[in-house]
Length: 169
Image (cartoon, helix red, strand yellow):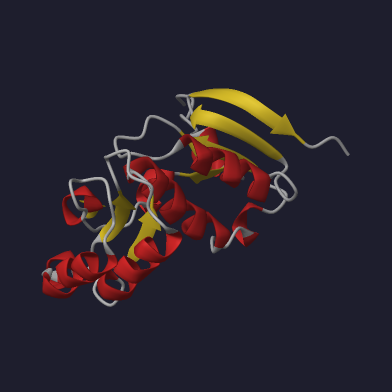
């Protein structure tokens, strides 16, 4: 009788988390407000409000939106808050910053609400090699969430992992 090939990975308690599988669908959009400023530098409230009133906010339906100003203008906080009152009814999320800031915020929300009960006292692999823009901070937040409950944490693929943490009892 030939030796049976046993998939020890499939039969183990090993759990894998792939942040790429949690990546939410939706267009990521940057709104640069410099064109709504006088000479791209000065916020004149009346003109600024007029730009906001006349802008087509419906184009951001189901978008994740990053608000920014690419000029060296000093923008008061209320300006980004005011823009948010217009875009929020259409968008999935709004942040002030660039697309990296946006992705970081999106994944913060995902990891905060991630049910980790299945990883309790189990060896966990955090899958690497993502093809989507997973922010580095998301991996750090995931470690913070898993470390108190996981038996061990590794990074990579089941065939080639880097050990990161092992609970010593």
